[in-house]
Length: 60
Image 1: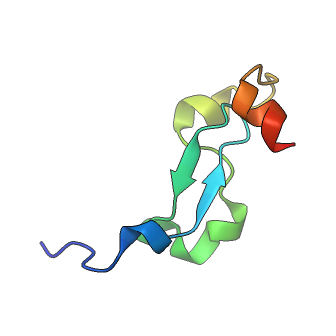
Image 2 (image 1 turned 180 degrees about the horizontal axis):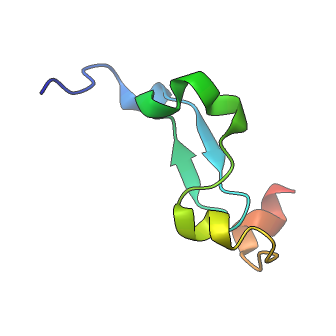
């Protein structure tokens, strides 16, 4: 299995809406990168819970 051979430092990133964790672009998200909001299924399930993460308050 061949991996990504380029410079991964230049991949786009986003912050998870729920926890504020940084997400890096993945090939599986290529078609819907604009719609990606959550870093995991756990965050997607907690999407109505407001974040108290300091990263999120600083990013707003």
